[in-house]
Image 1 (cartoon, rainbow, N blue to C red):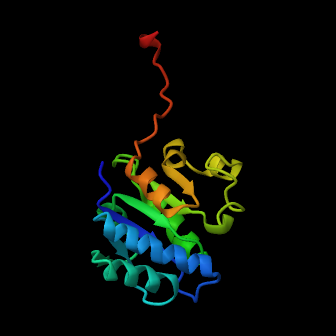
Image 2: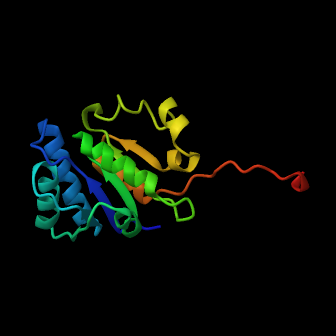
Length: 170
């Protein structure tokens, strides 16, 4: 599935680190340069403002939507930048809203300066193992480089899930 529309979550507070601000600017520009529409709630402060401004300056499309299941329905992928508890709340809420019957969508964590490392040692971390379905775990992509993360999201193929053989198949 091509990556045409991506929901991006970024903190609305002033950037905690210059590297986070740089990442938001790079992601906005990369989305625009690759013809990928940015879907966001449109909070125009902090990292989110930098993200939206850089996407628009590069000629990209920015679509403002409420934070609800519509964001997931309209998106081909979900991406979270570092910063803030609300980013975690939004990301995990939308990740869990994906309907198991719908096509699975990549969920990317831009792991700038190891921001998400403490939360998830990797996508098979024990906390994720216990509380997320196998298909949800397989949608998670963690990368510190925006270009590489977007490329991995664009190349995403839904994970194979374990299927129990029926007794008739043996």
